[in-house]
Length: 243
Image 1: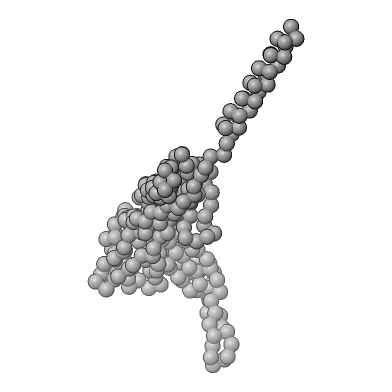
Image 2: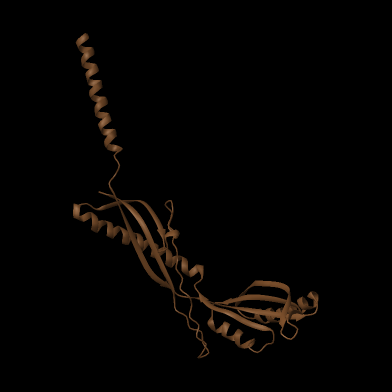
């Protein structure tokens, strides 16, 4: 009986030791490798925008606002007949002053009201038509002519570029691991960013990207607007398991 009990206890010790070894193996921290991946591409600029600004100077604020509002109403009425989108960007009134050299002091000219709207369209020709329509109108000014890529067009392009950047990182990890007859396994973590150090941030498993958008080029010498595509740059930092 005593011998059987000792044998039983011995078997339990062996089982516990074996279980501990297996548990240790299962909890072993995997070997990893951290690499960067990049993607550079472009996105077509499918939107053109211009800001139309109206100013009205009068003796009183009420008169100045009525004049500016009436002139902007004429502009918006014309734009209603075009396939464009409008957004008010400025509406304010202020006392306008000017330095009088003869009197050597600042004099008040009146109350000036400024109203500005951004007009965007899918067609460059529409913006060119608007510029021609209001080119010689008094107190109407055009500014900030630009072309840009809409979010609807930009999103799928950047998502594809992000995927390319991750694959680029995996290829680099495989090349580094091949020297030890290893390969990159599952993706453990990934972060994104641009070349600016303060733009790098963890994404907690979600794939996001930063887009670096180049400035547009406007050339009105020949009566047309010319713009290059939007530059899209994606940089990822990925950690892979080495198998």
